[in-house]
Image (cartoon, rainbow, N blue to C red; front, side, top):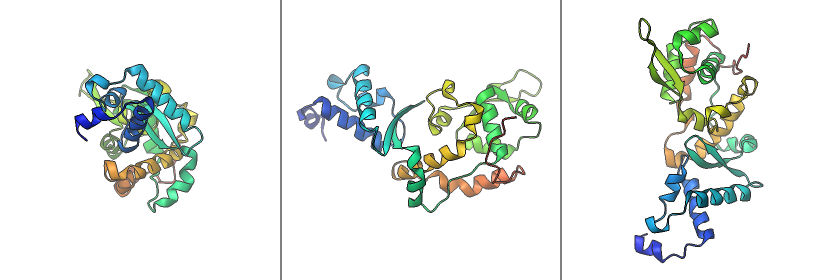
Amino acid sequence: MSLTQTRAITMTPEKMQAIIEAALMVAGQPLPISALQRLFPDDMQPSTSDIKAHLQAIKSRHEESGIELVEVASGYRLQTKAELSPWLSKLWEERAPRYSRAFLETLAIIAYKQPITRAEIEEIRGVTVSSQIIKTLQEREWIRIIGYRDVPGKPAIYGTTKTFLDHFNLSSLTALPTLAEFKNLEAQEAQLQVQLALENSQVGPSDSEAIPEENQAIADDGSSESDGALATG
C-alpha cells in the first residue's frame, strides 16, 4: 500500500489498534513501542501514551481468549497462553527440549550471580562446567561475554542477554523468579516451544530442530537428560 493510500484511510482509534495488533501477530519477535509508532506516517504517529493505551486495550480484550499480550525485555508480543500448551503441543511431532540438571544450574547461576566467570560458576557448583554447555548457551544467545576479569589469564565474564529475558517471558532481571520457581523452566519451555512453532513461518527453523545437537552437548557433561530439575541447594 502506498503512502497516499495509507493517508486515505480514516485512522480511527479502532483502526490504529487493529494495525498494532496485526503487527504484533505477524512480527515473529517482540516489538518495542518505537517500532509500533513507525508503522504509521510521520504526521500520523501516535504518542507513546497512545500506543500504551492501545496495548492495554488489546491485553484486556484477550483476557478470556487463548492468546495474551506480554511485555518482555525487547518489547511486546502476542503469544499463546501457557496453560494451553498441553493441547497445542499435539500439533507438532517434535518433542520440546529438556535440559539437564547441569545445564539449568549453569544458566541459573549466571542469571542470579552475574557478572560471573566460569571459574566462579565452577566454585558454586563444585564441579567443572562443560565447555559445550557454555557454547550452547552462547549459541542460543542466552548469555554473552560482557568483559574480562582483571586477574591473571583474563577470564571471560558472562551475563545474560535480552534474548534470555524474552525467551523466558521476563521484562527485566528484577522479574527473575525465585530459585524454587526456576525449577519450573521445563514447563515454561514447553509453552515457548509451542510459540516458536507458531512463529516458524516468520522466523525460520524452530528450536526443536536444534534438539539433537543440544542434547548431545548436555550429555557430554555427563548429565542424564532426565535430570530436568534445577537443584536449589
